[in-house]
Image (cartoon, rainbow, N blue to C red):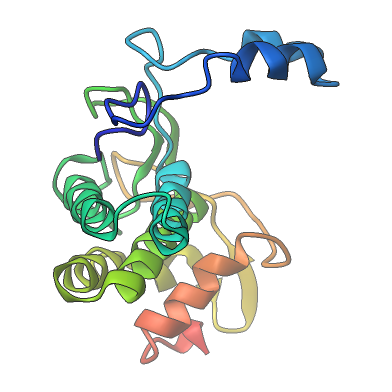
Length: 196
């Protein structure tokens, strides 16, 4: 994972009053339970990492982050996802909530969170090109997207994969973000009858 995401070591100063202001102005009574960055924050999200890749590309485009630094961070993040992030060995789906050490975690091996992660990587790859594009394509193509679709004539999408035996479970219709799984199956596995 790229440096600077949580507990940033960036030279840019953070607004130290942002979190207290959020707690005071949020209509959500649980906002005070937000865990600040640091060692006590021991959760990462595969989907959130994908969105982070999109955000950093947007920051680079807007001039809020140097393009070279953002590109380096994107490549580091995608490489870490591909080589260290826990994934199940049957279909290549990633765990949703690994620990800081990228071992275990929670949320199971999630098809939609893997899709959001992969689409963030593909977005970054399209934005930066070169090695980031190559790494993003390799990451996304190393996942069996069509395995998460029940059948060519049944649009059910399985949300979870059992990491011990590869069994897919659950039943989601592709009317929400789970459509992203079907989109990636069509984009990266056009030869699959389930991707049609």
